[in-house]
Each structure stands twice: as C-alpha cells, then as structure tokens.
Length: 377
Ligand code: SF4
Image (cartoon, rainbow, N blue to C red):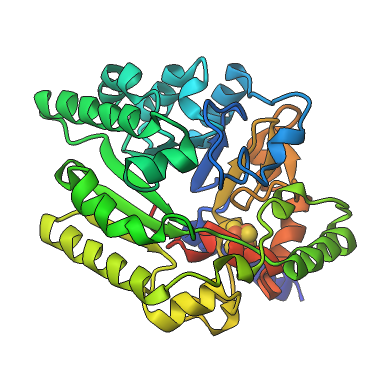
C-alpha cells in the first residue's frame, strides 16, 4: 500500500517535471507588456484607437508604473522569457529605455512593435540598447498609408527606418533587426507589391510580416460572451467586441490579386534573404477566401488547440494579466496587487487551461497567436 502511494507521488512529481521541462510552466516563456494605452496616431483600422476602437470610450488612459514593470521583469528573468513591449505606442513610455535595458541586460530577447513615428528621435538609443527586433507598421505607399494612419506619417517612418539602419550599419551591429508589418485591409490590399517593391528600399528590411486584418463575427462574439459568463463569471468583453466585423466588409476584394502579390513579395524576400511571415501562413486562394468569408473551419491553418496559455503571459497597461493576445476580457490576475509568478501558478489560470485543453474559444480565429508558431517570436 505504502509503495503504491509512494509510486503515485513520485509519478506526479515526474509528470510535473516533464511538463515544466517542455512548457517551462513555472515561468512564462513569452511575456508581452502593454506599457501604456496612449498613442500618437489614430489609425483607422486599429482595434484600440481606430474607427471601432474601444479606447475612445475610456475616461482615463492606463499606464504601468515603472517599479511594477521592473518587478515583473525581474521575477520572470529566471525563466529567460522572450519579451515584447507594446502600447498604444511604446516609445511614448517615459521609461522606455530603462525597460529595454532591464530586459536586454537580463539576457532575454526583445521585440517592440511600433508605429515608427518616434524612431528617428530614438534611433541612437535603440541601436545602443540592441533589442532583437522592431516591428514597424506601414500599410502601403505614401498616399495609402497616410490615408489610414495620418498625413505625413509615411515619410516620418521612412526617415526613422533610414536613421536606424544607418546607425546600426555604421556600428557594424546585427541588431536590432528591422521588420515591417503590413496589415491587409480591403482598402490597401492592391498595393502590397507596389509598397514593398517600389515605395521602400526592401534591402534595409530584415523581417517582413503580411497579416490579414483579423476579425470575429457577431455570432462568435456572442458565443464567447456566453462562455465568459458561464465558465468564468465575466460579463462583458469590450476587447472582443472591438474586433467584430462582418464578412461582407471584405466581399469586394479580389483574392487572386491579393495572393499573387504576396507570393511575389515572398519570392523577393527569398532572393534577398529576408525573413518572411504571413498570417495566415498558407497563401493559397481557397485558404484566403475561407479566411475573409469567415469560413475558418475550412482553412488549412485551422487549429484544434492553442498552447499559448501554457507559455505566454500578456500584461495590459492597467496591470491585468491574460494569456491571450489583446483579449484582456478574461483576466487571470493583476500585477499591481499580485506577483506575476503567483498569477502564473494560480487557480484562475488553471481553470482557463482546463477549459482550453478541451476546445479553443470561438474568437480564437481572430487572434494573431492562432496563426503564429509558438516556437517563433
Ligand atoms: S488562439 Fe485563442 S487561446 Fe490562443 S492566445 Fe489566441 S485567443 Fe487565446
């Protein structure tokens, strides 16, 4: 009897050790921190500050205290996670350099998505601190980009990229890698080729990501709301609501034209050795049609499960922690009142994982992590 109990006990410890080894579950392996909600642009398609963005309704914008961020980073460092910093616009954060140095001096990788408007101003500092990569958002040639992001934005961003590139090259550094993110919308989808192959000097770019505008249907949103209420006692989901659109918004797009352009850009990337990502990954006509017509169950990139809640923590500017990118509606804790590692091992997250072990959320198909490779940042 005693031996059997011992055996079971040992088995549990070994199982836990194996899970920890595989998923590093005692520390998150990827930590994304929203430093602040403030942004210096009002891009039309943005889920935060765009036409349907939910930050417009906020009376007060949130910003994380530096001492709180410092504690989170220090607590997570033993797990050597990969970090991401975003906003709003992360380069508006007053202690941005301190946060970047803390992460890099701790020996961790760091990505920063940015609208690029402040790059020129911070280029020296950025090259000096050496984040691994900047993801800079541009949506098309000058007129198209500025129609979506604001007048004069394109030229400011290009000046920033030039400054960053020149300083990095003059120091003979490999980092930061310069990445461009292009979000494909009905408005800009015919300009992908022109943008990458004519409007910018693609040889200055190291990484390139073409991402379809993510959306959820009203039906998915309502189903998600029900799950939040029944399973987790959460009764509103403004983050998910902001992403709701109808497939009819995309119906006029010529998907063949879209696919042809992406394939052409991808072949130029192959030629120049540029790291290429597309969300969704499979650029085939049927797959694209299924994506934009909300026929996600027919997609080649369809997933049954998501592993992010076992490896990923995202902290919003008000301190709330979630395990899903941008869906802060389901909060598992708050770093202003709890330790990140206690949240990571807490009962709330166990409940979330238990649910997600069985099935994804209805809105997962509108999450960029759904299309991402968990082993690549
Ligand atoms: S795919 Fe779903 S479970 Fe995974 S991170 Fe996104 S919303 Fe969360």
